[in-house]
Image (cartoon, rainbow, N blue to C red; front, side, top):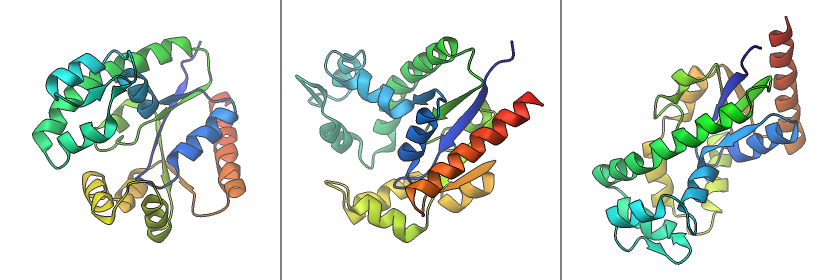
Length: 200
């Protein structure tokens, strides 16, 4: 049995990556959502809550990790961010390995990883798909989020590989600066193309 084709799905903040990931899932392609796994492990009773509280006192509560408090604790401090990542990343890797085992018979899988290039994850996938939209659309989407400010947006962008670089390094680009229907058509066309390539 051939192993699944592993698609690394990524894109900068506000580019519509979660929407595209949902379209892959709707089309029957299993999706590993790294952010969703982190939220689950940081939620009430989650396996990372105790370690995060020990490293960042006051960052958790009865519902698990207080993401706002944790964000404030690490904001702008690379050493604290590295300490948090040392707690989170190994746990996510374990979950990803379990996902691979559970879906070993699927023709293709999607790893939804926001910081794919930033963390060198592109080397662990077969194909990189970058989700992208024009900068003005990206900015409008992000600044419409609750609690988002221009300063926060600029800080996040500074931590991410620029969109133009991601597009240049991608195997495929899905444009979300259009209608949802057209974006979905791009996803379905890619699935069909990759399925056909696997069959030949």
